[in-house]
Image (cartoon, rainbow, N blue to C red; front, side, top):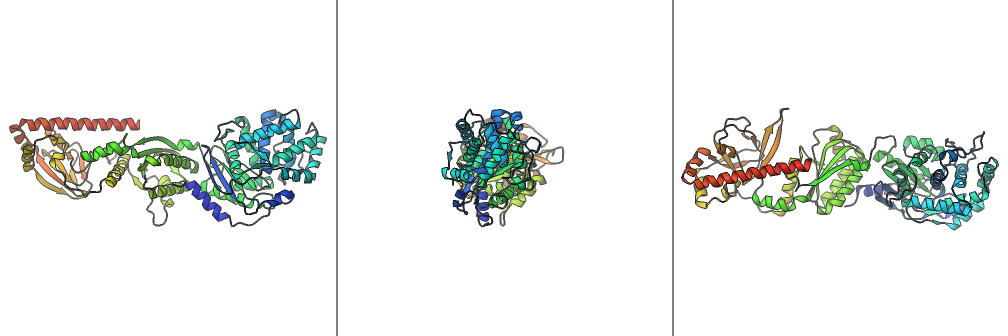
Length: 607
């Protein structure tokens, strides 16, 4: 089944591919060779999963997107105080190539404008410019997660036309910001802007920052955690130049753009995003890239100031229908089948406020389990709410699994609007939405019926008395005598057959057809279903042990036909044939032991 995240990105790519505003950068002649129709989107999760569409593998030059990562390298090499003495962190509100210097110290206002980036390049560790370059490429490669290369024609084009940047470098030398040869540092700056990356590379670089400095796929630490927040802070306030304020207000993610057409966006602890589209607006930002980020932020609720947590916390325990079967007592044939196949029913216990990243994590786990799954039960008892966008993704997943023959149902929602309303809104036209059950027992019983029913499609027949757990092993002549004493009684769907606390009438019941629920009262006036019984099962048998008051209610879930036997009549037969009573009591003890074992199994599964 296709991931709903992947499907969303493909749809988004298709919708925005028709945007043709903006122009390819031309102030660096080599950049004009880019195809203006190139367009890629990539999103990487904290688990290292990458979702990519379009030209996500098309190489292009990183340009100014290198700035936060080289700044990170300088912080790692020199420490925050040393770097802060050379480069500030104040937004300039000016274009990327502006000459924005502190009037007192001559320091660039921040490391995201060219002046600050040239300064931070000079601060990277290395005794020579060549050693500094090796350090820069090694650091960038750690963020990308693979070895990187250089686009030599673009580097030469930048170096040959970078007159304004040469002036900036000499000015930095004049103010003592660059200690060594300024042109050597400038050439390394031109080189770092000419590093080749793909859209997916950018998403992994962003995800590494989102993951506290650890690459989510390789597991390698690219940056100490103490420096990550400084890099993200500067990206948030300065990364989009004179569009930074509007970007943070509307989209709300630390980001950085480059004139090669790339944009990275970081949602700490959740996602890294990379976009590539060479058409730029008048501020030097990718037109399609900005629109992609707007849609992602709005549709997925990705604004950095929205509430979020570790996505893996959305999913708690996973267990199967074999560990926690329904509390009904099915016929022997069905029980034997379920004993072999009930592990194909999976419970997923969800937690907290479910946002897109948490649901994406849940969906990936469901996809990993799907090959051996017939039904998923989403236990929502500990879910505080779900966002509209997360509910849409979950419903798309449900529909996708349905096409593959896998059911997804909800349990224990308990009329909570924070869950029900988004799930209802997620339903498409003609789609009835999620099937929801009051408790896990009802949910797993439905799943068991579905599992067994697909394997056994023979028409139902009335159950015979010898199929009852009470009468197993009873000789046929004795069974015939017992059956002759029974009376057939039918009950309409919804009818209450027995009532808790009711004075017993000394009768017990064998179900030939239909379904009943055994209910016990709760203090709040409601009822808890403790078992469900179908053809071949019996109830009221405690009357055989002398119980005179009914301890539970019995409710007909469908039209029910029973054989009813009075204990007094049974005793008369068993007095003549003691072996009959011995067999019945042995079976009754065995049945009660099985029920106790099942209760223990449930307790162990839920502990």
